[in-house]
Length: 139
Image 1 (cartoon, rainbow, N blue to C red):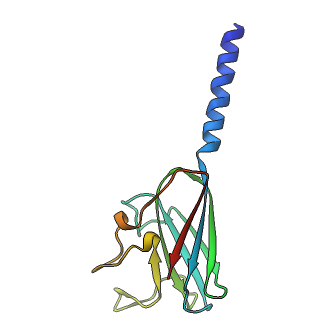
Image 2: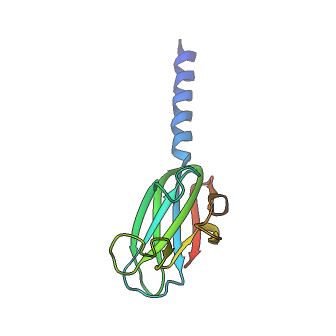
Image 3: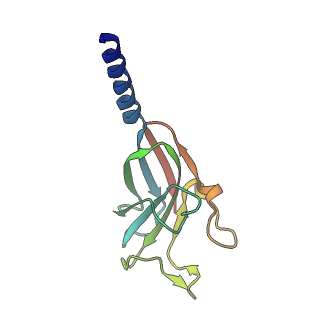
C-alpha cells in the first residue's frame, strides 16, 4: 500500500513539474520604427491555418526612441509566428491603399519577406522550446 501511495505521489509531482516546465516567456523587441507617433500592434500566431487571420495573443506598445518591447507569458512550447504593424494614427487597424497595399509599416518574425502578398507562415515561424525566448524584429 505504501509503495502505491509513493508511486502515485511521484507521478503527480512529475506531471506538475513537467507542466510548469512547458510554459515559456517570449520577449519581442521591435527596432527601427520610423516615428514615436501612435502605437505598435503585435500579434502572436500559433498555427499556419490562423496565420495573419486569427491572433493567438496580441499586445500593443507605446514607442520610445524608435523601439519598443512586448512580453508574452505562459506560452506552451510550440511553433509560433509574429506580425507587427505601426498604427501611426491609433485607429486600431492597418491602413491600406486601395484596400490591398499597407500604408503603415509592418514586419514579421524572421524578417519574413512579403513577396507578391503577405509574408508566409513557413518564413515567419519559429520554435519555442525553452523557458525564456527572444525575438528581434526590425520595422
